[in-house]
Length: 328
Image (cartoon, rainbow, N blue to C red; front, side):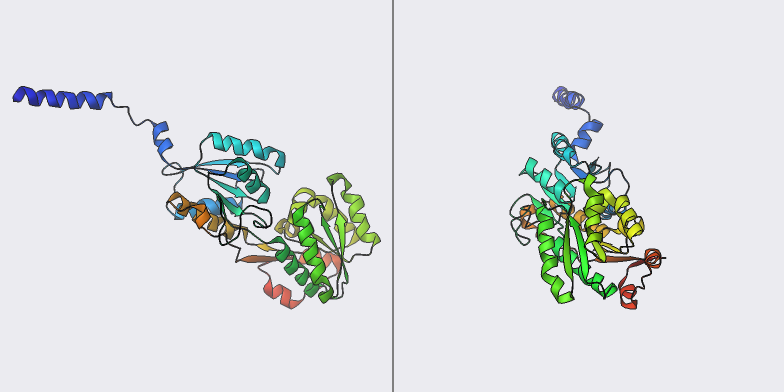
């Protein structure tokens, strides 16, 4: 009996010795790994840090119970397919995307790995999801409606500059989003006593000649999509300052850095926080097709009084009252 007991103990000890040790790589392999793909050039940015903090608040600590693979596209849209493929080779469990082109690149690469949009304009119209209530695939998250936001921007322009009658809208005519937005602006313009002039920019090097058309047609204000400001903000600012043209945009950077007068857009940090909630639910077992896509509910209105002073414009009190930030 004693010999049998000793033999059993010996067998257990040998079995434990033969078992592989829990190496660090194996521990990492057991925790969820997500890919975070941004259009920005480098961290940190407020929206990215808000996402990380929201994940921590939900109990997901990088290096402990989750791994996050960050990739920064630096607005090099041609790099997106390769960056998505790199994340797929790392066998990520989920991909978080910033902006519609990134979400599209991720969807083109996989139909099985969940994709959470921290932002993704016109998700239904661009074919990212079947509907907001029933996404119907592996994509869900946050989606802003560009045409609606530009309509609100035009209303704010009218409130700010009630005597303006002609507004130029800069955009790329090959973009379906631009076409829908222009159509929306043109539909509401008559009710505001406005005429919309479309400035078609297909190539960045044509920016000066395209903007010059605005002065030739006597446009009194300029509406610029956020993506245009991200690429050409400095050149647009130089034109606006030289020709004394107030610029309205969805880009906060336009008023904070590039002579813009007013910006109106979703609170991108809040959208990053809400994207983290989607990630948390999916990591806990929810399916993306069961999670309705949400619209942003918080917006920011930024006004640059320094620009207004240089242009000789008095911002109405009701606009200042609505503003979430005033640059003095």
